[in-house]
Amino acid sequence: MNMTKMTWSTLSSEPISEAAIRALHSPQQNFKIYVNTYQAGNSFPTRAGHAFTLYVLAGSCKITIDDSETTLSAAEWVALEKGSYTFQAAGNEELTIAKVFSLS
Image (tube, rainbow, N blue to C red; front, side, top):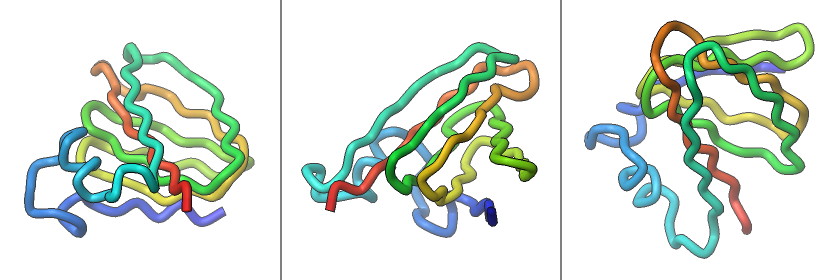
């Protein structure tokens, strides 16, 4: 699977934040947005039934699917296909991510 990470600055000149992500994905009724925070070192599996976009608001996130792995830092994002992933709060900082699912 291709996990091409991008920088937030390719989408907006505003600093990355939950509000800026919500403003980017409008109208609100067309998107479901989940914001979660994890302690450093925590690993958490995710099974997504739909494609989604993952944004890193703070910290670093290691993403693993099958034999592929990539790490995103704050103000980076990646578009992911439906499937099973393992995310890990990499480094020593708390991780805050936003997952955005399109409902349309």
